[in-house]
Image 1 (cartoon, rainbow, N blue to C red):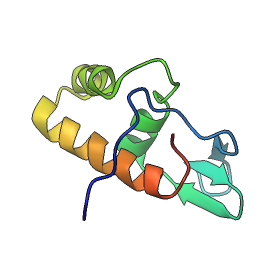
Image 2 (cartoon, one colour; image 1 turned 120 degrees about the horizontal axis):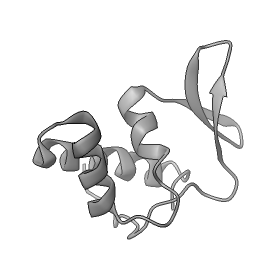
Image 3 (cartoon, helix red, strand yellow; image 1 turned 180 degrees about the vertical axis):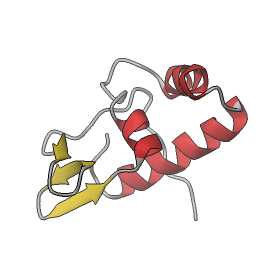
Length: 91
């Protein structure tokens, strides 16, 4: 898969929202004619996409929160953001 240009300070697109789906017991991204169900790691990443933090800052924060390897977390964050940018829900 070819990587897209990731936003410098990612945020949800204007037509999307992050919400908790009580029926599924999961966090989801709602977009026109689409719902993306998030796991814990994806929610932790997307909830930090406010347009204020850079990808590097997101990775640093997530590395502290999950006490994980920053290289692995960076790869996972970039892969998730690449997918969400392709789906048009992150800008």
